[in-house]
Image 1: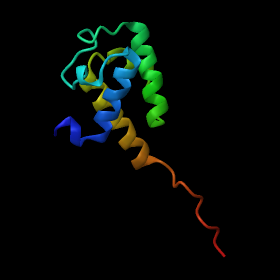
Image 2: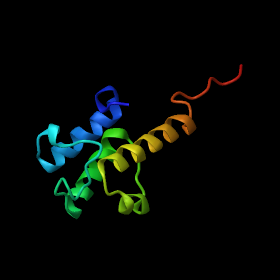
Image 3: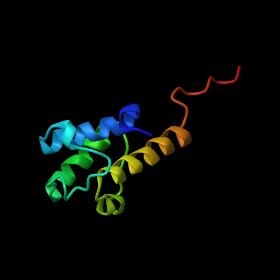
Image 4: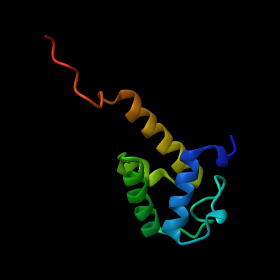
Length: 97
């Protein structure tokens, strides 16, 4: 699926560009963090931004294993789907009468 038809991927790539302060066009799914010149502080800042933007929590173990743009997108997608599929109803159920 092309990234431009995938709003989640686009949002992640825009966050990466913002954290790294580079033009969005330089970020693609096939880029590694190393290719983008991201260091450990950039990675930490990115994870905070992603968690905030998508209202998810990324475990330390998952965070340590992420090395590329595609891995961020895939990981975020799994967490967002898990949160929306397994989450409690957004409004409490009506009390029985």
